[in-house]
Amino acid sequence: MEASTSVVLVADIGKSRCRVELRRGNDLLAAADQHGFPGVHVDQGPTLAFDLLLKTVALLAPALPLNSLATIGAGVAGVEASTENSRELAALLAHHFRVPAAVLSDATAAQLGAFDGGTGTVLIIGTGAVAFRFDEAGLLHRADGWGPYLGDRGSGRWIGQQGLQAVLEAHDGGPATSLTAAAGALVESPDMLPGWLAAHENPYRAMARFAPQVLHAAEAGDGVSRDIIGEACRILTRTVQRACGNQESPGRVALLGGVAGSEFFAGLLLNSLSSAGIEVVTPLGDGLDGAALAAVRRGLIHERYIHRDGATGTN
Image 1 (spheres, rainbow, N blue to C red):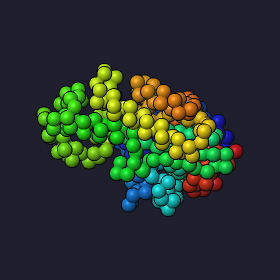
Image 2 (cartoon, rainbow, N blue to C red):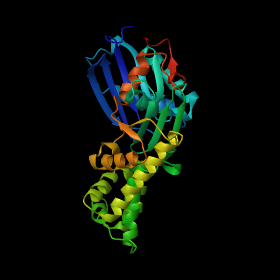
Image 3 (cartoon, one colour):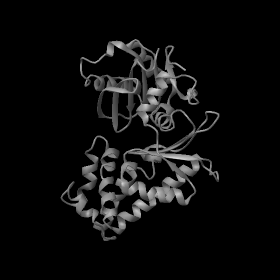
Image 4 (tube, one colour):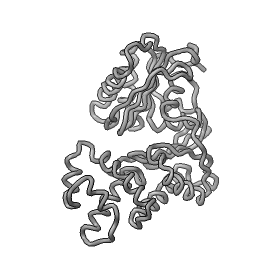
């Protein structure tokens, strides 16, 4: 298979968003996206991921060359938590599309894309937060990414949650914050916030959507919001240090994820990381690029973490 001319279906199926692209070499033929899903590790996870991918693929133009598809690469949330479910998803994809399929975690795909298959650390800050590092031996070193109950500290969900908590604290007589006015777009009174949150099918995503309000308030000078963002930066810096084994020279770190896309936040985080002696580099690609690389190339240092079905890839 010639990677430069073959048609590749790539997917990034996360907890907040599912993105799908059809590519031929470096050419993007089509793209589609919609909501995410809980993760492939949950009960019926492979079926949920498979159905979501098919629904997203259905949004692509019908005239596209899916009949010329050569391989599939999918970065999927929850892969690291269930080898069995990940292999099942790879089998479902390979059987349905009748081409080889490669399934890997969305964080591994992000790291793979960020460093074009090389070593290095990614700090992914979206609804969740995790640091992934692959060393020269191809071993994975991670920190956080333990979900909204036990981890993901400093993430979009964490920032949004801290902001909403600050609104309720102000309502109880705590420090005043401009976030109270921002929460007024959600509910008539702060005491309605618990009910508003409980009504959401995905409360973690709902809290994450309040994170931009916290960032905006911090940038405008709100003291409470600045404290939240400052603590998020300190937490995320420690997360990177732990993924790097608290080494004196942790190496290269690339920032990915929706929260890292905020210029204000990225600047503060860069300062925090630099103060800790951590070098931040521009990522070469993203999770979709990593999924594409896994689909068309074997022998990657990440190979033990990629679940394949069928003879796939070129070297």
